[in-house]
Length: 582
Image (cartoon, rainbow, N blue to C red; front, side):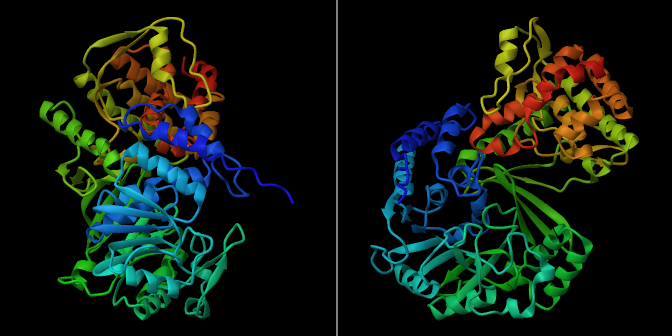
């Protein structure tokens, strides 16, 4: 019998504490410990590269975005069952008075304990599972259980009965559940027999069997175990990385979800299923909110409010629709650790509005939330600039022209002092430990300028109306004083990537040999450098600076952008870029 390698719990705990003690989320965290941690954490048989599922469980907070729709439910004393490494427990602790995190795996529990100690959280770790919970009846006002992530779990009926006993009469059970459809729902394959099949199961990719049921089956099960008020929220495409979260009874929100479905045939089928009341049973994952007693002052009008939650990297966007029209946008941080970005956005936009140095700022302002400062905005008018992009030289040039027609006046009016950066300072600006590549070597000082910057300037953040930029949105990575050249490089690279389907094909199509796209880029870069008195070499060296800056701000979460936004690929192609732009 082969002896299994011992899990390096002590080393992992030390690394977790090193990372967790970074109290300022905008400070640069050394990425070497993150890579070391990823290598130590357990991985499934089909995982071969960073980041693995265990690392995602530690740092990818997007899987808990459903909290934004049920925040008033999470209160008092809270039980988090199958807590893993504790990420959900820490987020729940922002809403509840105290959290008991129950986890059956001994190694995961040790990591959880080390994270609690490093963060000084009001979370109590407990080893156990759904079969043995050392708490008295009625002890909790909130119970959260994730049955979608665990490979094996106790009988649902027995578990829900046990949890009902532990819950106070006015409390709520929040259960994350598997639906009957696949990882990404395939509407055509769903049959009526499968839709209402009893006790449906499906094998996971690792061979374990997970229980899968329809919302109809789950509701019957909850009611049979003492819960008489049940609400379901759909998670698309799945519970591990939910991009859309919504109340399945909210017809307005469901209609908007269908609008996002790929392919006309699937949209037509989904609308047909929605009309006959079947669609709510076919989502891949659910969050069920269950109460022993019906909520007071809760009516169907409130449930059909047109709220659709769109999950982002550091925050979610709550979209409110009425009669098919977007009425309100609210940007909510995933947790208080991440509210600095939204607060920064509010402050920068307020200051730029006061200075009247730029047009196209979004209309809105700050609003408090249980998750930290949020931002409320009116919908932008016009059409996203990225929607004009096609693999056509004229459209490509049109998008570049409009984008730089806005950013050049912004940088000229708001520029502050001129900077001369030494080679060592340039190297420091471009240093990014997460990137397995070195920035270009600079032998001479480079001249730039300081001023406010957007921080993520790209066609998908620009709205156009009547042939001009009407609004530039999403200023969460902005700064009141920084290196604005980042915006120009970001817009150029993103336009190329969105035209050709990725960074590598963009570099090949635009910079491998002279063509119409190369001409458009050369003219645009020349126009910007002339207007701002910037040398071409400076522009090329700082071309991917926006990506470096964002990766350094939140390396533990922003590694997910590396697949498409890798500064090293730009630097490796530096000679080709110089050759085509000169």
